[in-house]
Length: 183
Image (cartoon, helix red, strand yellow):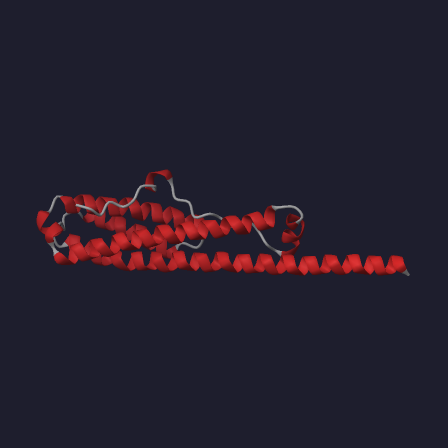
């Protein structure tokens, strides 16, 4: 009888542990999803600014068609990205394309003095900062989540519960610097 009580108690503790662990994993996975949503909101803001910036610069440098097409393609890649690695790759391309736009703008003093361009430049600078913060927060939450599901004994139950490793939002080496928006 006491052996039965001990076994029932141990089984009850294990079930409670598994329930608690599942709830922690689910909560942390939801935090990862929420953090990604924050990144997504800021990226959308960036994507909304890009056409206005391109149109403003295009008015002064219409012959830079290839540069504007590169920005448009990179923006479309970002909007269509379906995974974190795809999004990171698209962001790298967009950052490089925006650098080209600002390089073109430097050759046009009238453009640099244009009030609309100055406002877009300030908004893009602010948005870049928000994106950097959102990316960092997302990666921090992913780190906590991945640690939670990869440590023993959690790793034994994480697979059974359907929790898998999440990807960090990493950009390629060529895009690690900030977009130059100062003149």
